[in-house]
Image (cartoon, rainbow, N blue to C red; front, side, top):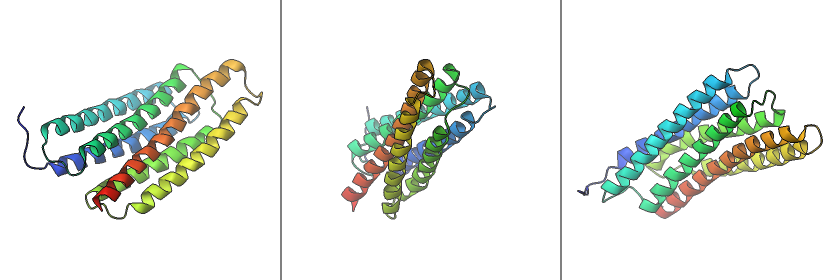
Length: 205
């Protein structure tokens, strides 16, 4: 294998930006999927396409790491950021798939709030990616992501309390719990992305 001796910084930044923008698309598909009366199977298929596209970009980043001698920042951090972005996509796609497979017609209103948090976190993450080049003006991003993740935690706890409050039968509780757990993990995943970017920024400052 021939190693490149010159940095290919632009390609890494472009791949990270694509992955983040793909999460925005996925979060908006989730908004549609949880809406009553939507064509959930068609939307879940679009979500799977997003997940496949995200996988392709993640693999491209890993291949670039294997081919490049010089990288814009630590190789371990590049790997971790790519993996974190990929994880968020996987969690959102899993939630969408479960909604379809479990045939859950009506979701609690708190799920709408969960997805709203994910949509905002995705938008903030996509907005932050271009600033990786300069490593400037990123502090507000990871602070806001942390705040959103705290909100997501609160919503998740209220959801669990409602699910186990006797309103739903046992089978429905099991189905909904699976779905809301995937959404909660997606919120955690956005925080992991932000923490990784904060770590990179500190190292590069």
